[in-house]
Picture 1: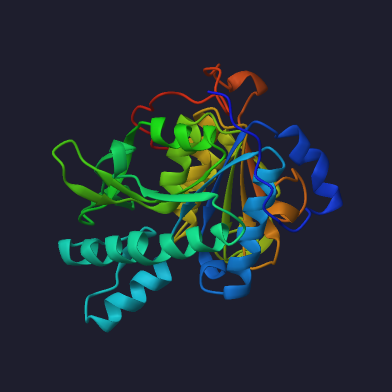
Picture 2: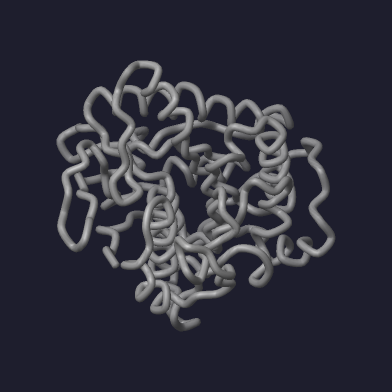
Length: 318
């Protein structure tokens, strides 16, 4: 599939020091997980949308996967439904799932699509349910080495990227809500970090960028310490059992992504205006970047934007 010419929608120019990296990424897929404080701050939302459009105009193929945790929790509280997390994953009853679907696909996704489309007819929203893009199985949370039932929470076991590829070939920005179907038609709530990682691997993305509310992975997590700038997959694998809370799925997602062939996965502070362009494409600086253990680990992909796989098997559990 040959992409058509890039749109002429106006967007803020990227920082000068990010331009060489954007030029090197022309024609490549970059998956961005949009979450945290940036999703509830209007100025940061607009900044993020401008950054996405700038990537598109630079010839990059951005794919946005969004969260919506604060909005979901707020509505659950208003409806007098329990807000509970285990090992960084939301406990999802059928009633909670109804709220998750409504907020993600009916509110948050539409807002992100609208902000990007303020620059032109560029973004298209979908969920992992659509066209069976994401297929999942029920997953537990793991606490002290033991599985804990957390309800209708899914782990992605297959990705069909054809719908997203069709959008990329038309120079559109897919905005994906992290919901998935099971083999029997059941619907699962999928952690957005893990959904983004699964898509990045299946699309043969050059990079996965995770925007969050912290500066990166601290050396003495969760007590603090300096941010770890660079990690190999093996180093992260060793650290993962000691992590807690929301950092668990973020770093698990980064590990899965690089082991599926993504060249680098980067966690950056989304509370900083312009963070996607200023920090997302630097191997050093603020944030934490995870690399494969060896440069030759990247699989050979098909000749498509970013070189995607057609599907992805069960994600590896570290």
